[in-house]
Amino acid sequence: MIVQEKLNHFINTNRELIGQELQYHLKQLDIPEQLKASMIYSTEAGGKRLRPILLMASFDAYNHDNNKVLSSAVALEMIHTYSLIHDDLPAMDDDDLRRGQPTNHIKFDEATAILAGDGLLTLSFELISNDLHLTDGEKVQIIQLLSTASGPKGMVAGQIRDMEAERKAVTLEELETIHTLKTGELFRFAIRSGAYLGGATNEQIKHLDQFAHYLGLIFQVQDDILDVTGDAAKIGKPVGSDEANDKNTYVKLLGIEGAVEKKENYVTKAKKELSDADADTSHLMSLVDYFSKRDH
Ligand code: GRG
Image 1: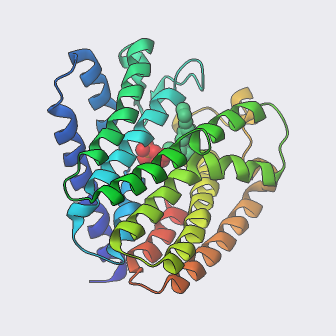
Image 2: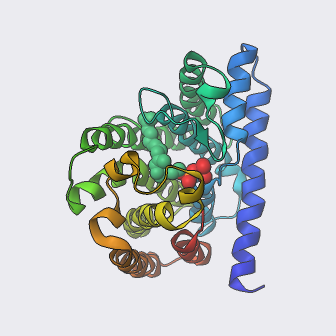
């Protein structure tokens, strides 16, 4: 199989697997119907499952027994989904649409959306702590990494810094700090925890950590490029609207060409770190291009 086909196969198989696992864990919950429907709605609404796929690709570089990573991968997607539900709320981004469908608080109501997010966040940790494939030491390590990445030192810090930076001019450095926290920390968790569970050495994890940092930035630069060139521009906020102008983006700071150049620079750096990680990182290598060239 050529490299691209192999990657597509890996992505499609694991995307489906994650979808099934998520639904398995949510549908069996004996909880109030409205809460359950709301939690299921946002996990089923067409997410790309990038973070769990990354986690599984990082694990796959060292180990092939998938049973060991499934709970961490599903927990990660639950936390990502919670963050999107809360990010869309009127108190935050106040968005009516996500992935082309009504956001959770529009489909249900605000209180339900808040609780669905809370439910997904906390359930994620319960899932890991109940996983019979993990040793107690592995559970503690994964829970520690995930809570730090998603909590007030990680994603939550990124969200508040982003809100504080709105309508203010920020430097490229400040923009990168916001992204590193807001989106990069979950990518970093994906790569680190996959490698850790797969049995990577500390030296290998160090290179993968740097790799994850660059990958998060590649994701974000491409997100900003797509905002002005891709489908998001067609279905989202019109370019030039007040809201679009308020957003701090790579394109706003560097122009399109500058943003593309920045992205290419990160692609080179990410690939170098991967080569230094010294393992079968072929899926991760192809995922760099997938992230950099994605069109949605
Ligand atoms: C509310 C605590 C809290 C945090 C929210 C991640 C985040 C923090 C907000 C999302 C806002 C946003 C649109 C950021 C841009 C990058 C991003 C994370 C996009 C969504 O990720 P994808 O493209 O989502 O992986 P899908 O839809 O594929 O699941």
